[in-house]
Image (cartoon, one colour):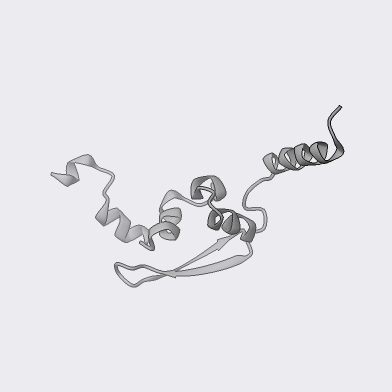
Length: 94
């Protein structure tokens, strides 16, 4: 029979797996693009931001954000500048 501490730990892990991301998007983050200087505001869940700051990959911590907005948090490059710097069309590099 597992110990009570072990049972509590298992229950906490199971509860974390059932957590939906982005339920409490009340933290406003304002970031400035390092390329063009444009300011961009995002609303995120503070728990998800803390998880990302503690090492969780951003795509796992904030799946509700579009990839270009997650990139803004990673590299401080706005979606418009990212589209110019890293086009999705492979022929654009030739």
